[in-house]
Length: 443
Image (cartoon, rainbow, N blue to C red; front, side, top):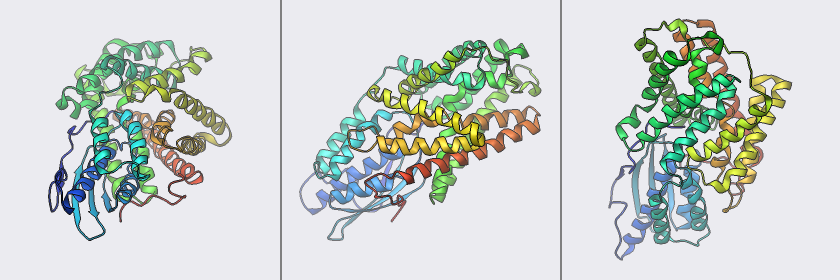
């Protein structure tokens, strides 16, 4: 979800040789530089949009390089990739690409898939591919800022009934999510705010919740009132991606991503605590007892449609993919509900993640189909990993030790279940391009 953003133009360092953007003239080095330049920029864009995991970057870049007549060695960590591009006569270019991972402009992932397919098939050379990459990077976001703001609000409203199925929860979330969304949209224009956005958003939401909405315990605990509005900032995707990378053998990348996810969770928790201290409220008020449900079933069912619309707008997903995403969201919810009734919550989450990964892989086959990341993302959000972490931390901070550790233990189990389920689903229905072989992180 939303993360402190890095530089929009990620630094690229060449070691050694010419700059990756050079070589526009003739001679043998010119073509090598054009290939290296395209692969560098491709890697940067893939890395910048790798909030859901980086295990496929090496494969994508390697296959594109081979199609252009070069062998590519890729060494990955979470925010950095080192590329060595080698042509048949032995000449090489080595570059280091840095980009802060995020999940913000998924329209670029959608536009990148047919470009990479054309490069692989030999329909686009390095020069043409670079020109198309220029257009992808220069294209404006598919939705204006106010639709992104609306999307974040709808995203939170769709999630709110999972916390407490009450009308009060929905009304509170509408107000709090609007404040959080305004900060998220403002951070797109103020990079300094983006670096502390989770902290600022949780502080504002905490203060407003305590001062305006948490006076009556009958409406539920303040943590449950805050969480839907902060769900956009909770790094549940990072937690599961880290677990999946660790399970796939990407130890360094997974470990770094896990540490970063925990840091973001702690930042959100600190913001909530600062709000508690600033209002003079005791931390004992951070309980998460739920109110009695009063929402009709049709609202609970419709909330997933609201959630999917919000995901589409908040993460800049092209609207032509809406029906694919909606079907996968309802499929994930249905499978999780049915499996939970049979094997418990952790088992149900595992089964739902495996089914989601398998179906998303099937639906993503073909250059004209939605990318797998876009298909998995909304369904993945329904499994609500990160909220457990934040509930656990804030409940611990409030002095409710047993409940806090119970939430954190559940977080560990659910994160592992999702990660293993996603890996299993992708293994059962492998991408045709890989022939079922696991991606290779480096060579």
